[in-house]
Image (cartoon, rainbow, N blue to C red; front, side, top):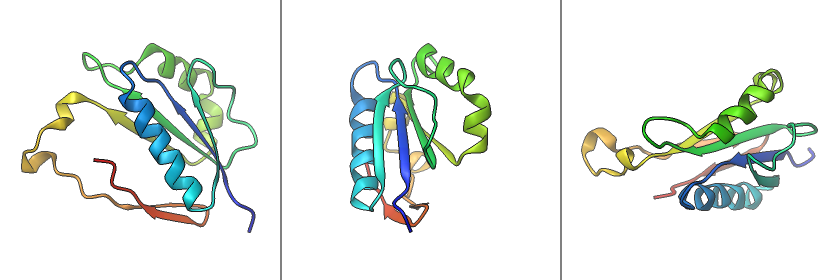
Length: 118
């Protein structure tokens, strides 16, 4: 089986989302995937990729205009591909039990990794 090509598109205001996107890309590469990572403002249409991972930060309850525009421009293609979204929000930084999230294995075209980012 050929290694899957995964496109990671993110938008980051303060650098946190960028760091997480880079970590996700590194983990996917460790699992055998070919990964392209880019900011939404520089991203081209998702062509010749097997999977797309989108990442964005939430500010004032909203996704960034840049990632929203990327998704809107490429909606048909993204709907035809396996697509994942991660979002970064300070509201989620709490430690209460209602905010606890157990990492789950991520299976992408033969790449299985359990990723704990926090």
